[in-house]
Amino acid sequence: MANLQELISLRKGDRSYEQLSRACGGNPGAPRLHQLATNEIKGFPDPPTIRGLAKGLGVTEMTVVLATAESLGLDIQMPGGDGWAALLPAGTDRLPSHFRDAVLAVVHSAIQVVEEAKPAERDVEGTSSSGDASVTALRPAEDARLVTRAARKRPTTPSE
Image (cartoon, rainbow, N blue to C red; front, side, top):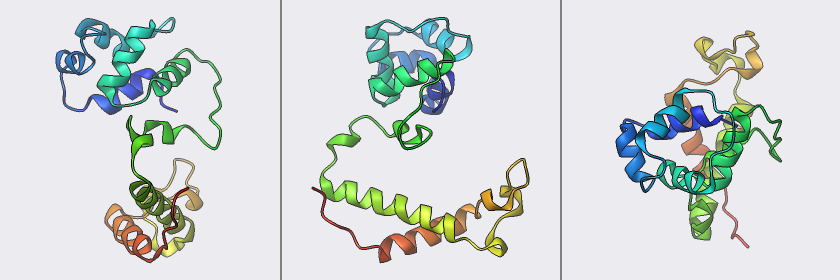
């Protein structure tokens, strides 16, 4: 899970802090956003600030709370992984089932492509800092091509 500073950086894009503050509904203000993004935080923001951040960053309030907890050094373990899925945009839960099925098919296909990648297909620049070949990445263009092909082949099942 990203900490609050990383979350703001990831979701801010090329917006100024003033623009981001407007997207947050004015709370937090631009100076407070800059402070949250660049300084060590000492405690949780108040509920209106959490709501505003969630709105402006396009994530859930839970994502902001978890990112804040990470910034404070709290050991929050997300079930099923590192919290990457928490970075999905707010409103993801309201997607119709056919959109969810399509997104899940792409994610499953990407996982399959990475797991099945042969060492010869791996990009040397994608090796981890430890040099472990098992965690290298494919070239981005090759990734996209393979995932698209795998997603087309993957049967979708109706959501419940």
